[in-house]
Image (cartoon, rainbow, N blue to C red):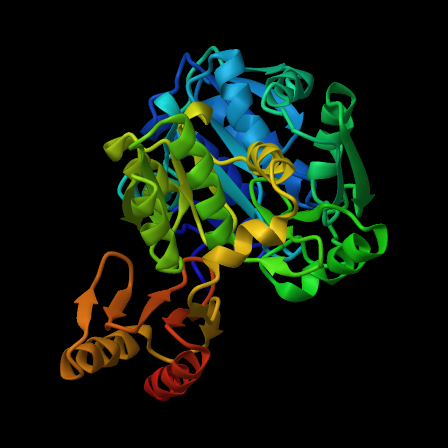
Length: 443
């Protein structure tokens, strides 16, 4: 059975891989590893069907260890990050499986000082204690409740400063984002939101709350064209990711969105460092460099990106999966924070497609998943292929092989039994030919 303890969060099928007993043990282990006894700790959840039971069990594990838990209710992951700051707690946890299908449950943990808990930063210790059911009991644990969603909306509304009124279609995917918009919209002027799937429903009755899959954006694309909207935005289940569709209904890849946000930050802070994940088009570092910025490549995953941002004091970071991280948001990601800044950027141009067209220089496959029997054996073949053909082989995250006019990266998934391929060529023909070649290595 797959292990729900991943490199940057806990995520597994409910109740087979992650259930109330393991959530309780994980809560208690969190208290032990982060030394939370006698301290305050924020906990929230998304709208998944498993959310209430997993949250209750996780909180009980904390309370039994003497932690003063502040339960902030049903929120987005970024809203829980905001709540940690707003309430001044020693970190927090979000009960969510993010964009995974409805059958999954999960937990994202943040330590004191907004330190993400993942591989190398406490996850292994939490897993070891949880698995061995080494429970500690301490007095003083309790549960308080706090409503912070309106304060978060006030905070976000200050970001919005469009140059012209905008009409935007938003697909909430039946995730949590529709609830956030209810609080945010009354605080904004010069914006018309056309909502799709805004009712939180952890069964995801219309489509998966994963805007990275093209099939999940089809309704959004159709509605943008029908409404003659300025653009469309799709969010994931826990509201930390955002993907765009332009005024013609064309999907904008999230690495090109990273470039747009990089331009915004480099105008604000000339020479700033911008981090981007290694799956992104090579146009991203070229564009950042061209604007006088310092591009820094990172591993995939929020805990690694946040660590890279901190190390390099990056103003902003973007991930191909639609996560955007902001130094001004405690180094964390927020789909709504990105959405509001992007709306400002788009309002300054005739349309979104005119901003994206100059960035469409190369030909990227997007991320393709392959089921393989032995990921390590496949990685060895890929390394050998790179060396044999004179490529530059890098191992920041999986294996990246770079050539003059094409490159590819292959990584083992942290959340599914697959390897993930991203490949890009200087022409569509080259991309397609090299994709066929690399696929043979994965057979």
